Length: 199
Image 1 (cartoon, rainbow, N blue to C red):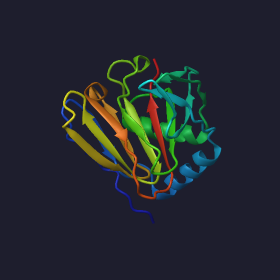
Image 2: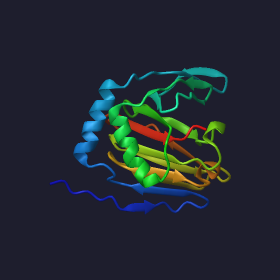
Image 3: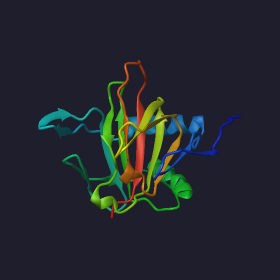
Image 4: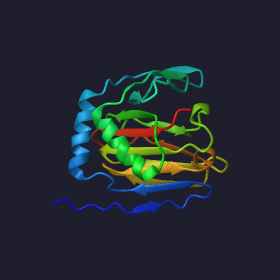
């Protein structure tokens, strides 16, 4: 019998609404979903421009949506695939906690510790005012950092475990950046699913 804790933990971040559910999916569910998504997702690696230089994005991505609307960030435009059965199952359970109906899921595959995501906020115009972002983690655990947008000395971090859900709401994206930093530790792949609503 699997024992897991789905009690919410609210992060102490001023002008933000961030709640962490450590064991949102059971260990067996997490392994099953990871294997399915790792094997059957049409992963891609786009180029991004940083300070005028073009680099390969340090992770693989894929986009799914219920409404066919593209998603743009960092000069990249992604055209979505249709939701798979597995993604629809995950989406339904996340929506039961988030209290909203998501249209879109951006998937990130961090192949090892050298894959990362730089400081950013999910505040693109098509996400609307005070977007709800739900982030599911599968696979290896990774450090997730927050940084206050007005005072970079104010930071917070949390370990995102496999099967966890991080729910960001309210003014979070207006007041805080977040990132997945690189690590020199030898770690296994991680898949991150970020559910959002494209207006």
